[in-house]
Structures are given as C-alpha cells and as structure tokens.
Image (cartoon, rainbow, N blue to C red; front, top):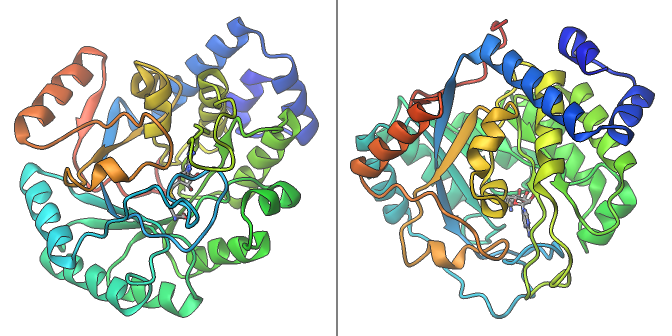
Length: 344
Ligand code: SAH
C-alpha cells in the first residue's frame, strides 16, 4: 500500500485505515523513505524558509487546547505595533527572508482595517516578498480586501474534520463556518493551507483517516500539522501530548498524497523531539518557519508549553543553520517558494 501511495498518490478510505492499523516500525521507515524520495523528485533537497512574526496574542476565541485562549487570564497580552512589525520585516528582508508569516490570535484591534493597512504597507515596502496570514476567521469581504492589498497565502487549519470533536474543542465556534472560511480563501485565490492537530485526547485512527481523506480531496497548497502539546492554563492542561512518531507518519502520508504540497516541519514537532525539524524533513517536509518575533513579545506567545524557538536574530545564526542543514544533506532556500502546480 505504501508503494501504491507512492506511485498513484491515492488510497481508498479502507486502504488508508488498513495501512494505519497495521504499520510496523519497519513499515514506517519505508513510508518515510518513499515520502522523502518523492519530495526529492519534486523539490530536490531544498527547504523553504519562512519568517514567522507572532504579532499579537490577544484572542477573542476559546479553543480549549490553546494557551492564548481568551479565558486564560494568566497570559501577559501583547500586540506589536504596525511600526514594530514593519521594522521586524525590514531586518529580516535584509537577511534575505522573502516570505513573512503573520500569525496571531483573533485580535479586535487587528481585525479589519488595521490588518488591511498593515498588509498593504508590507506589500508596498517589500514587493518581492510573499505575505502569509495565520490570523483565523474573518468575513469574506475582509479576506478579499486582504488579498487585494497584497496578502498571498493564508493558513487556516481545519484542526479536526470530526464535527462533534471540533465543537467540543472550540466552544462558541462553528465547524461549518471554519470550512466556509477555508473555501472562501481558496476561491479568492489565496494559496491556502489547512491542517490538523495530532494526539488530542480521544483522537482515534479513524479520525486521522478522515483528516487525510479530506486533505487529499481539498488538495490545498500548504498543510500544517503538528502534535498537540498541553498547556497548563487551559482546560486540557495535564493531558498527554501528541506523539512524534504519529506526526512523522502523517507528514509522510500527506507528502505521498500531495507530492507538490508545501509542508512545514512545525515548531510543535521540533518542541517534542530534539532533532524534530530534521526528522520532519526526512519524512517529507520541505518548509521551515523561523521565529522573527522580537524578544519581549515572543516569550508570551505560548500556544503550548516549552516551545522551542529557532532563533534568527542575525545573519550569523542563519549561516550556522545553513551549515547545519548542509551537513544533514539539505539546502536552505530563502526564495519566496510559492506553490507551483506545474512541478512534477
Ligand atoms: N488564530 C489563528 C492562528 C492559530 S495558532 C487561527 O485560528 O488560525 C496556529 C495553530 O497552532 C493552530 O491552528 C493550532 O492547530 C496550533 N495550536 C494551538 N494550540 C496548540 C497546542 N496546544 N499544541 C499544538 N498546537 C497548537
């Protein structure tokens, strides 16, 4: 079945279930090897670098797993000014970054006009640079304005495709609305990213199968997945964390289902395993997000506990990373790295 995935990029729901239910550790090794081989064939050894700016941790939502949820009164809230974001971008642009990812809670301040204005300024100042947004749900009309003013990509994980589980995890939110947002983003021509959490309490293999089938069917440009990591000041505080092995298996299957997809080796994965980023690359990931959030702010962007940051405060660090990646057989690539549907 792994060979079938490799050659046809497709499995039926039953086959997927059978594969996941019977995967030995040798099978998993073979799965990772096939996924990496396919990644090499499409992208070579390049890993695309993104600059992540966590620009606000104010949030009006209450996702039960998330450390910056509204009801967490222990978190110190911050919001970078437009000026600070642009300054951060300027420094990173100088270092060669050509993709900025603005991520944050659903902050009233940056909800509509202020968000559009920030995106427009970024686009005016750095026209050769891609802007990715990871700012949650907005009205279609705001998404459209963001796109018109220069935002190119949007990450909005579906989190879980199981409607009941979604409802339990996201009090006051609606699965259908999230899905509608995702559809809208794609219709507006954003390069669109979806994704799910791994290892949530009570999550079962059939849930992963459904998430994978959705991802194959939706055919997104990007997929962000990572292990759930508990945060003590949330309702899921003390719950068991998601595991690295399952995350790597999911990465490889997603790569085999969607050969051209942009697939990050995420911060959450890197947090749970020492060589997390590289194990992600070896399993078929081809994107790495480096943290550009100014210190003083980044310490308070704790979606989960123990976040491991890959710190890029100057060019020297970037050179060290480049050299380390080279030693592991990967090439750090600072270009925009847009989704390219004509790759094969
Ligand atoms: N507010 C934005 C950005 C969310 S943060 C939005 O709604 O899209 C980006 C991602 O971090 C989320 O989509 C979620 O999948 C992940 N995340 C949040 N809390 C987490 C936790 N405790 N462990 C692992 N990942 C988490």
